[in-house]
Figure 1 (cartoon, rainbow, N blue to C red):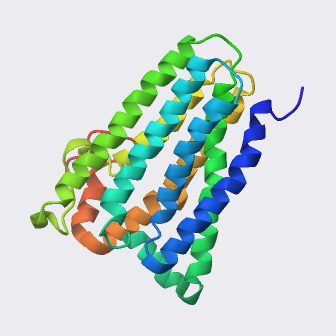
Figure 2 (cartoon, rainbow, N blue to C red):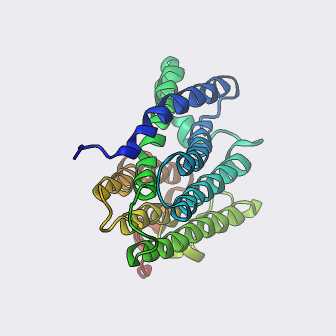
Length: 265
């Protein structure tokens, strides 16, 4: 038995396509100075390639189309959120502004590496989908059903967290204040928590599936990135820089990641 499963063949095609598309987004970023385009590029390529994978990979048609739809819904929802609320007529996200200043004259080279890293991320995060699509067993086992239920809860939770924070920020009087209601009462980053759960849902669906252990790469890489690289560390630093003591008080009472009841001040 080969160490690499057959559906991995499609990833050899996905990588150069993603690299070319992200190169185009990087060129647009050069003129518009908004590196959030890297995240938008990832979402669009991932969504399209989820559909392409459902077409190309051999497997049960119902399972393939369901998984392809799940990938597209996840990616296009996030893409719409980024386009409308982070890119169109918006200033560059403060985290990317900070990176741009730190890299100084090397900023464009640094962002080129980052954009191409997003192309690699498309390949990495497609692995769970292609493994599940190639599952030779009849649909749907208990693992798949439970995983789909978890996915629905996670995608709804992430969308709700984004919506609640967006509504709060659109009120001018809330500028410089910290949102403490809704899901944000129980976690300082509920959107990141539900993002992690989305990838954990694929892990549940992969129980008993051939080569299913490859699916672990999704939740492991995403959780690592959120906790230590591009997610929470930058978001916390920016919040402290802009909201100061108000955010420090929020830190003292509210769980950083996993939702939990707030502490008394």
